[in-house]
Image (cartoon, rainbow, N blue to C red; front, side, top):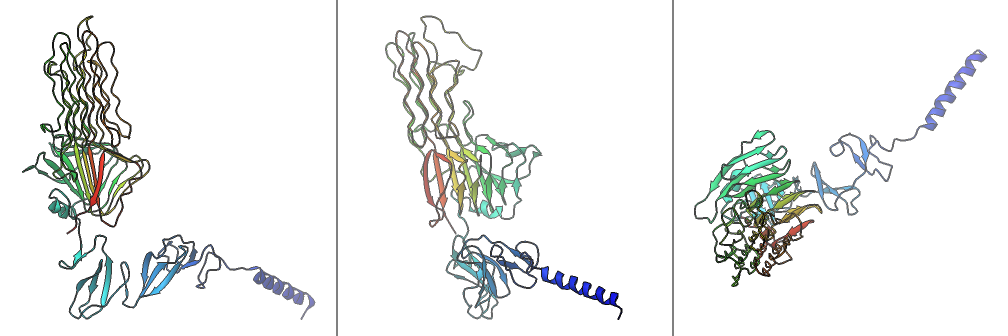
Length: 499
């Protein structure tokens, strides 16, 4: 062999052997069924988790949580939550992990604890489904939500309804039965229920419900949203009173909680109206006139803790001397939301049923004459009702559920503040000279304040603040309600009904 050819062969062999010596395994690949990097411990052979077959991936999971079936084995999160284990399943693997039992011959469906077990009739388990609300031995199925206020039929209809994802800001009219958003009128399965109820209900039946912007609810009927799936609220959904217009579902004529109307005033002044009540009492109206006229009585506690039947808060009272151009604060409306999966309030998600503040003169601003009684103290409206029912109800730190009372008024040209989307009371305004201030509205922790008594020679009393509304959350007995954000109103929790 020529010397030059021998040198070339030696050089080529050196390069090849050198290249082989420099090659190292790819830590992100497990085509050899092995992952060498501790930070990428799991071999996703078929790509069912990360999407790339034969890749080593990082894992962050909940210890013991089922991921998927692999033949008769259950891929399950390990005790540290950083990798998966393959668990051998004695009776095969189902949609929620290892099947837990064998079946009696001839059985096709049965309950095993809180699991629904499907069988092939030959004694073999074909699937096991974990039932969030328990399993019904009698019906051989997972339990379903049994909503309050007779809405079981509506809940069943929602299972075959369409999803409703609103586009931008929306208005729901409970009297007209319409849902309008920025895309126009939305076709939604719905019904109106009025028989035997203190206030009618407008029921939306949807597979799932998601806001796309703030939702304003108008009309006189309460709003009910019934969803087979998830309800996601990322904006404000309001059944609150608007100025002196009662919220949808407010119970206007309940003598027990409507703010008291005063006796007629006299040439030397008049008294203030009482604040409306519901979950808590409103404030008394302030005294006025000479001789003294007593202020309107505070609206009392009314309705039920369970919000059955569903209804909202009561409006405030007025000074009997004032014309209909002066109007007391409206009562907050009523809202019920039912979900078969969860109700989730994201950042900025608020459910509001606030009462409005006492009113002002509806016409052009008036000027008070010297030495003559002036201004008017109309009572604030009470907060309304919010009833939530689902296997899980959660809220972010920037969300809220509020049913606050409106403030009482004192000025004829000044509208008193309505209840707000916070736990801060609506503060009654302060008026000058002989007219005293309006009472603060109530929150979940602060009582409504009385209107101030009129003073001096032409005394006019301030209106009482509106009481707080009611908030009720029904979840499974083993679950906890974790609101995260603001909850302001008379709030209670109860057990979710199942069937």
